[in-house]
Length: 460
Ligand SMILES: [Fe+2]
Image 1 (cartoon, rainbow, N blue to C red):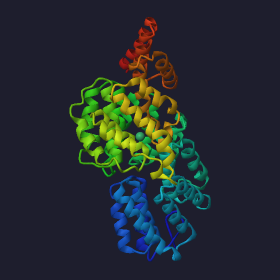
Image 2: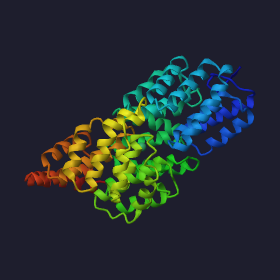
Image 3: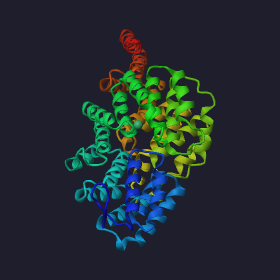
Image 4: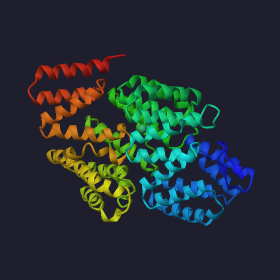
């Protein structure tokens, strides 16, 4: 019996296969472009390794596209065929992949968490559970899942700093910004090419409104991302968010064109980054030219994918902004509950996805009151579509903007009071607060809110 570099038993034909497996896992943890190359080398060394088939299935699932969903199921079948010779841990991974292929994200996550009770150094189970907790909007679980295994890791364990980085992101999404920053910065110091942890710290700066710190953080570290996959685009997108808040709109558009919107990309994360940034820019009155068109074109080809509600509402936003309301309405109408029976996403589509997309469509039709009516009742449930607080802030902005445009100033002010209490350093929040106060006739208070925004913009 072979062991991987963290001491877990691994069913393999030879030591070469184990070496390629180790290299592949390290590449995956680093979100590196060469992950697939290591997987190919692994298959060449041992085409019958159960974990090779399982990991290949997992990777297909991570792309969130229908074509690769089918391939994931093929890998599940080939892994099952090898299951008799596998360890209990490897068989548990087969069951996790099975659950994931059936759309049972909760079940898959529970399998990985079970594996971690017996094998706290199974970094693949840990990473995937981190990912699915994220996609379930389960920020406390992101934090706690990592905390549970930390006693079994130390600096001598390969991958230790990646795991510290996962913890940093879980802490950040749970609101413990000081711990997230301290742990994340230490991990990046030890492992500067670790883009996930770099990104975790970037989230801290976003949430605390420390946009100038964020610009420096990402700009200094960007030279380390040359070997990273398209997650680098998402990290450049975060740099764009800082510049957006600083109202450096030309810089945002330059980053859009040169760093994070590769128009060839069909990847859902790349497309949702782009949609989310263009909408924010448009809401702030920035002319974004014809950049929406290719996003709407791509979205129109994906309206029947229905992999995650988070993705679908972004596609619907691109369609609605481009006034392709028939396509956007069709997307909303095709989120039927029945189609997703027995999957984790079914109730999320039903209770959050459809009202949220309805609100987006109403907003783009100019029916702002309807947008508020649809979105306000579910605003505390929006987290269930997954993604980060920074990503979902798109929908909070939409709700505030809709309330202002519908002349619902008291509600807008209430939402903005929540926002400025959490993040007093946000320029957008103070400017919209001023708009709400103007609407309420509180002109002196509005002037003070504008002064707060101006002083944040001129600081530094
Ligand atoms: Fe992010």
